[in-house]
Length: 395
Image 1 (cartoon, rainbow, N blue to C red):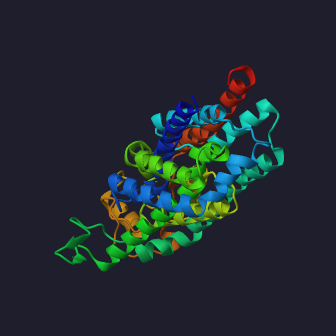
Image 2 (image 1 turned 30 degrees about the vertical axis):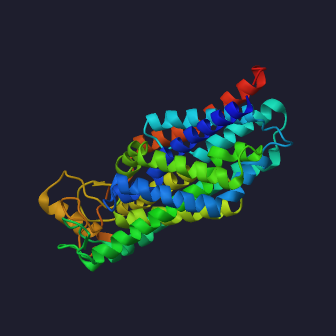
Image 3 (image 1 turned 180 degrees about the vertical axis):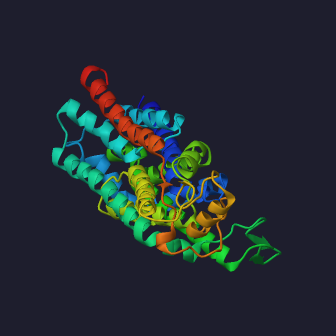
């Protein structure tokens, strides 16, 4: 019976990790995919590798926090662990069906907290400390990105803006060399954005491998190493399959991100998540990254509102919309570092006061939907766990 339960627990853990990969790959590599730096398939493969690295190195402390610190005593029987992991996986699966990357850490902590409330074993000070970081970190990410968007982004875009050429970036004949239309500037910019996306994958693994296996590691059913390998493998599977919808949502629907914007969002959110994971705090990776995207867009919008050059509405971080005259589009393209076709341009940006006057650099309707589901999914896991462990005796 115990062997059968353990097998069921492993299957549920894989189910959770699969949904973690689907949810977090969109945030980690959405900016890179949206900017055209990597394909969805490549993003999934890189996510699998770097999530394993993050979980194997930094993620161990988060496993300890979720597996032993949130609930007092030794309550994680195998059946309890299976039930909690099922709540987490089900909630994340619902979010992935809607194509919205939900916060895996918030969902996992919510399920464990619901169990702790139902059994009167909740370690309230630890939970309050974790929740306080959930409020602070997204605010920090939003304002850091907003300041960059308002005051520094033009300079960053001017330094790394490149035209994405047709054909392969590199050729191997047999030694690697630049593609027929590739410049060194394009190679450098693309390499940089992919490297930081991998850094985001690392931070996602550090924060989220615990969400799939912490209860099983906490009750001794799996060793730490076994749990990390299991979770990382499941995350990789989700990254290669389920993540395609969240890659579209973050990379294309929320805002249109050029390489410069992708670098800003990735650097800010990944750094915050990695620091919190090193402290043993289950970081809300999805919320931090999403708020960084919104903050960058808002910072660019507030800058544009105070400028003087007439021009079309901007769709995305520095991207001119298709409406308006050709002359106006050309002026706005020069100001933002983009060509009129939406491709990255080599032309230097104009002076800060010559940016277009109005900008819709993030999409309020999509943002509201994402924020709503990012809070609804963890709440669903918390309430479901509390109700089951409180009122279903056999569990």
